[in-house]
Length: 287
Image: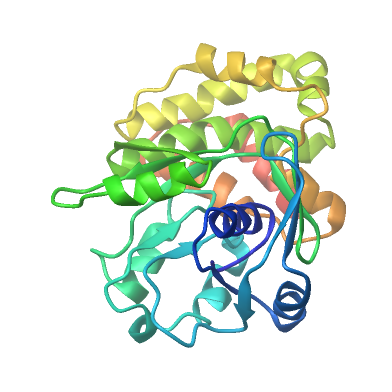
């Protein structure tokens, strides 16, 4: 597990609880805490439990699977902790926000090894080794290519408690998440509002931004359903915050380029006008 934070820590703990040997690769402070205390999970969905894991600052032995769950802002530095020769032919499963990270990992580990995926979950690291899982769900979609048998990987994750589906091609899987995530992340972060406050007090902007993201998605060949996206926002608990918003509140680097920047670059390539997205990204970058 490269990056045992909110997402990676939850997955590492669930896989450990399911009986798998898990090695977490992280910075020295986090690795020390995990070796000493394991990973403590607080979850309405999975219960409260502590899972034992191994941990170090780099991968020192072969692995059967490498899950990459770092923030996009930390990807280049984190990847240096996992040398390609240590992985051999093991699959690399990135669960990052955005649509451009898969090519970065392919350049390092090889095209056939990288299995892009997306995860839908609200999970936060409140301290090294302490994970608070707030959503009633944790779901992964895998993107396969011809000749890849992702059934065993999907079964491994599903058996650990994370419903996992082999969902289709990479573009469709990644854009399905970005078209949903970008409006949520940009608006909640720009105005410092929860989803409940955003969908009421900033409803007009939310609708416009969803329509812009959907238009870019369609231009990239992936159908999008703005009404369905809005319905998902409306179903969220009112106090829900985006991960980008939580990063802003904590003073951490924002995944602005991976989310908003990727949306703008795709829009420019396809000649799609996204004035609201462009303004919000500029304001967040300048703030």
